[in-house]
Image (cartoon, rainbow, N blue to C red; front, side, top):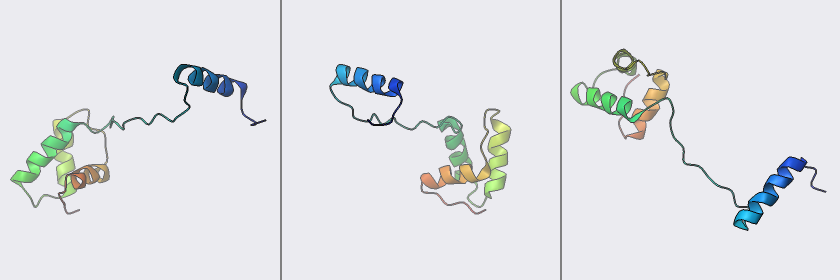
Amino acid sequence: MFNIDTRTFRRWIRAYEIDENLSRKNRKYISYKLKEKHVKFALKILQKDQTISIDRLWTKVNDKFKDFKITPRQLNNAIRDNNIMVRK
């Protein structure tokens, strides 16, 4: 009828029996690469030196944290999300 897998249909039936609703459950996005400690450190460096380039900032954060595995562009996006502009 709907041309779907039987397992999917059964899962929908089980969900409907529990909640009496088949609404979508939106999950909150959690960053798994960029942590709050990385952003705070980068913002602290930017407060000291506002003319630093994004590549030098990325190098400093990368030297400080071993679990820092993002690109300079991703770091720039995170900094911009905090309403701060950095030159490239």
